[in-house]
Structures are given as structure tokens and as C-alpha cells.
Image (cartoon, rainbow, N blue to C red):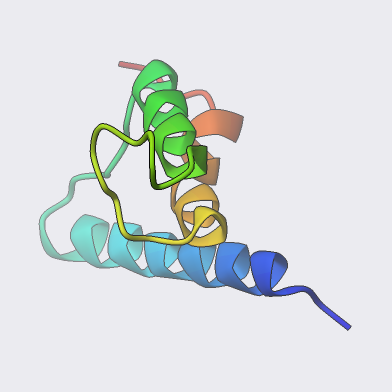
Length: 77
């Protein structure tokens, strides 16, 4: 059985793929974050609620799925 974390990461990846496809088709642009910023957002999502300076209110699996392409793929700037 697939864990909730994996399902949320998959859902985040699918949402990111759909958003990139729609933006590229409609406007000809691609959504990308620098890897350092993506790691920072992922780190904030991984912190416990008591010590988080900024509350993201998204599960870690979903944030990981949304930011995984930025961390795995290298894009030219």
C-alpha cells in the first residue's frame, strides 16, 4: 500500500506538471525556482509548527512533490 506521503508527493508533482503545461501552452513561459530557494521552502515545510517562522500550511509531501522538479532538474538561466 502506498503511504500518504508518497500520494501527496505524487499529487504535488501532477499539479506542478499541469501548471507548467498550462503556462507553457498559454503564455510560452516555464515556472522554475532556483534550487537554493526550493531547498529553503522545503526546509521550512519540514520544521515543526512551534518553531516555524513562516507557516506554510501545506503537508511536507505536497511541498516536496511541487518542488521536486526544481531540485532534480537543472535548467539554464
